[in-house]
Image (tube, rainbow, N blue to C red; front, side, top):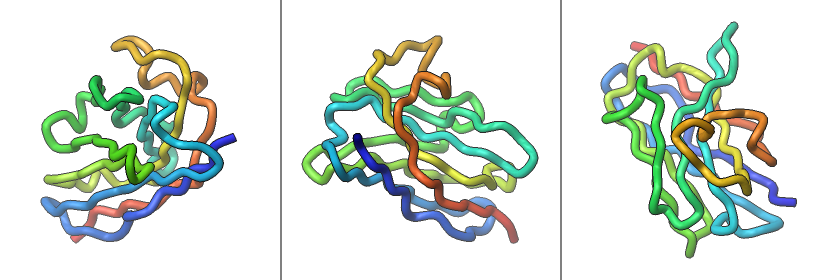
Length: 127
């Protein structure tokens, strides 16, 4: 079973940028469709973005479209989330997750369709 580890979180001022990375052990990420999710204090976990195993298809939540970019480097076995123009409402614990099921517009953010999850990395956007 694949084990996932997120990195790159931290404290950033509004308008700033961060780049999150998701690494894997026990398997290679290029077998999987990979997603980023987040959970803010007192709120449920929500989908942020997902990318197909080939990298050819990407999906974004409306709240981050145009500001966040998901990408993958299968040679390095990583999936990254570049986050620009960060807002205080982006503050959350960010998780990466993988799934074997195909990604569609209507299911990319369904939590129960992801098979393995990382432990999360904290992103705090504050002045």
